[in-house]
Amino acid sequence: MAEPLLDVDRVTLRYKTPQSLVTATHRVKFRVERGDRYVLLGPSGCGKSTLLKAVGGYLFPSEGAIRINGRKVDGPGADRMMVFQEFDQLLPWKTVAENVAFPLRVARKLSKAEANERARAYIDKVNLTKFADSYTHTLSGGMKQRVAIARGMAMEPDILLMDEPFAALDALTRRRMQDELLQLWADTHFTVLFVTHSIAEAIRIGSRILLLSPHPGRVKAEIEDVAAVGGDSR
Ligand SMILES: Nc1ncnc2c1ncn2[C@@H]1O[C@H](COP(=O)(O)OP(=O)(O)O)[C@@H](O)[C@H]1O
Ligand SMILES: [Mg+2]
Image (cartoon, rainbow, N blue to C red; front, side):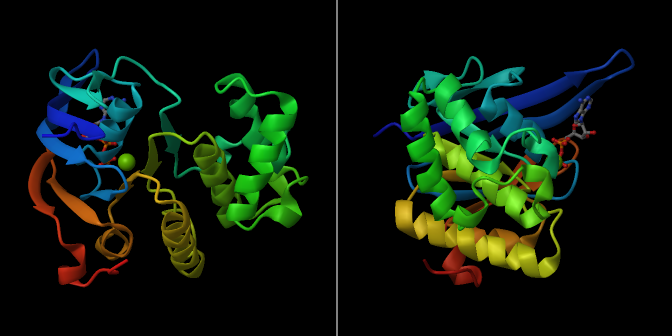
């Protein structure tokens, strides 16, 4: 059988604090294939962010393993880019274009001209062309999230990791951002692992959904055919 892009294999994640040992997830198992819009859905505290950080290489499993293209994750890498919920994930002293170009220069080692060209192309994709030279603190929350998405996508990672990226937006903006993400996916067919606690959002975004239950987070169900439960059939 072909290797999946991402293999989360019976992963238990724990936090050690001076007072206690918190088990955030218990033997969670799922696989993400290329082109999936894979959603982790569950209530607050079920370990979604913890799982995403472990896929990102910022935390390590106490049990089980995480593999990307068959290789065990042993730290952060440009093959996995993260988009967070918080609007302050950008560098406020840099413009939109500089924010997107910066990691391309540092992690992808592109020349200034190449990085700028690629940054502009992805800024176009998220409809921020007119704001490329604006400082990010002048932008709305939705626009900041578009910059973060452009920055992640411009790195052309194997997988984009999104941790409730639209949760802090008002309902209309959130809906618009969901549509734009689906449009981007229709254009470029990237792979995304998307975390949310909203059932409606999971059904709109996901091609596959993993349902988690809390304390500790465990797999409750995997929904392979989201269209059948009322999702977008794209
Ligand atoms: N830094 C930490 N130290 C100790 N416990 C933590 C830490 N971060 C998260 N947890 C605990 O791990 C569990 C999962 O948290 P989290 O992954 O943030 O859940 P979710 O993103 O699904 O809301 C929760 O019980 C939470 O309290
Ligand atoms: Mg979280």
